[in-house]
Image 1 (cartoon, helix red, strand yellow):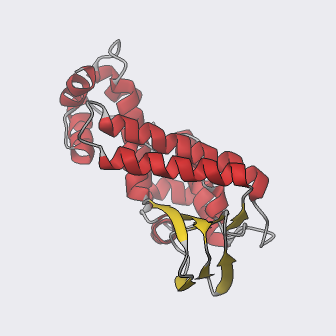
Image 2 (cartoon, helix red, strand yellow; image 1 turned 120 degrees about the vertical axis):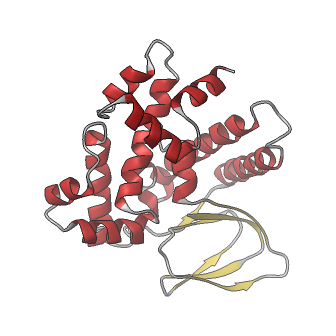
Length: 250
């Protein structure tokens, strides 16, 4: 995902074969699967931008309401936002904070956590502003985007007990192959990776609760035993559940 805010000057951008002239206080929210081309930049142009991947979201832990947070990246809405000065200054300030947090990642005891929390604030501010600035350019989401959103909603409801891609595909009346390919095309990750991301996020939250034993965490997430849960968690985080819990406590 790419978000660009023009501070001064002008940028000419082509997104999905449509041209946009982006001037002062204008913002572009460009989805990952868009056909994008930078056409021209004025000599006096200054802009702030942030780019992030689905992999980064999986790493920091995707919010429970991720589908709602990112619906403005769908083709239903125009990627062009005409912000007022106050809102443009807010977004510029948040991007600057993220830049500093990323640059100073190793200078503070909780540098990573500070970066992640600042990023969450940025996401929620963007979603809040989208309510004011979104304009509909298509009357409906594309068929593939709708499928991915429906799949994500099912995963949110069922990931603790259901991690089989085929089972989700059956509920959506499609093949597992088509589901995996479509999710990969729209979200940048395949269906299995999306499911695993939700499981890992929930596992981290449960492990942070020291009143629960690791065996209880494994049981809550419907793993057949603690050993299988441990292998799954280490494969996705590089840490055993015990190592993660000890590191969090430290």
